[in-house]
Image (tube, rainbow, N blue to C red; front, side, top):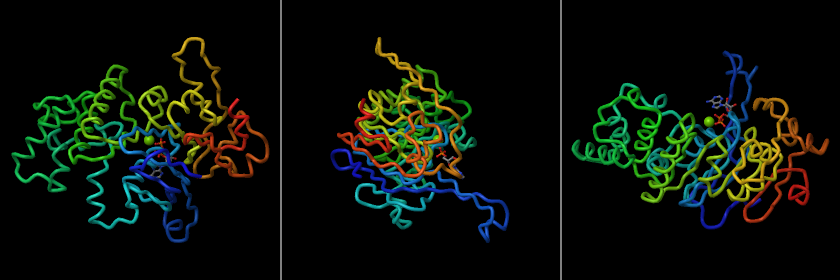
Length: 338
Ligand SMILES: Nc1ncnc2c1ncn2[C@@H]1O[C@H](COP(=O)(O)OP(=O)(O)O)[C@@H](O)[C@H]1O
Ligand SMILES: [Mg+2]
C-alpha cells in the first residue's frame, strides 16, 4: 500500500516495529523464560510532508509516544525504516546521528517533569547549544537564550527561574524554546497542551503556528484530544494497539471517519455544527494488552461492526478510499462509505 500523501515527504516511516521486552530476573534475561514482549508499535507506515501538521491519535497506551520516540531514536526500533529526507536514520553512525539530532526535536507533555529541576530555564535552553558546540562565546549563548525566551513569548528575566517556578503553560514554552534552540526542521509535539486550560492551550497552539511559519517547521502532533487535532492537522493517523487503522487528510478523517474504531473516537466529541449531533458509540471492554494482542484484526474484540470469524483470523487489508485516505478493515469499502 502506498500511503505517501502528495509531494516529497520530510519523514517517511516504513514498517516500523518497536517492541519492549519485559521479564523478571536472570531466567528471562538468559533463557528468555517468562519474557514478555510488549508490541508497542507494530508495523506502522506513514509519511509527513515538509511544512505540514501530521497527527497521531489514539487512546493512552496505543503506541503514539513510542512512534515519536522511535523517529528520534530515543528508543531503538526492532524493524523498519525511518527516512528523514533521504537518509534512513536507523542506519546512521554516531557522528551522523549527532547531526540528525539537530534537525529533529521533541517537546514533551510536561516539561516540569521532563526537564532537570536543578537547572534554570536559561541553562536548560543553553544546554543543547553547549552539547552541540554551536555558539562560541558565553555572551553569544546568553544572547541566544534571551532571544528564544522572547520568541516563545516569555521574558528575559525568566532565564533565572527554575522549572517549578513556572506555570504549566510557561513550562511548556521553556520546553518549546529548548526544542527550537538547535533550529530543527521537525518537531514532535507529544501531548503538548494536555492538562492545560482551554485558553492557555489556545495560546500555545497559536505560538506553535507562528513558530511554524517563522522557522519553516514540520510538526508531528501526538494527542488524544480529537477536538484539537481536527483543527491543527493536515493529515491524521488513528492508532489502535500499536497499529494505524486509518490515515488520511484531516478533513476526510474528521468529517467522515470510516474505520469502526475511528468512528467510535469521533462520536465521542461534540459536533460544532448544529443539527449534526452524532450518536455516541460506546466501545465495550478494555483495550487488550499489547503483550498479547488479539489475532486477526486487533480491534475485533471490541468492534461494534465485527463481521465474524474473518476478523478474528485474518489481518485486515488496506482499503484505498482515495486522496491518501486508507482504512485497515475487513468491511468492504462500499459499506464503510455509507
Ligand atoms: N520503555 C518502555 N518499556 C516497556 N514498555 C513500554 C515502554 N514505553 C512504552 N511502553 C509500553 O508500550 C505501549 C505503548 O506506550 P506509549 O507509546 O507510551 O503509548 P501512548 O503514547 O499512545 O500512550 C504501552 O503498553 C506502554 O506501557
Ligand atoms: Mg504518550
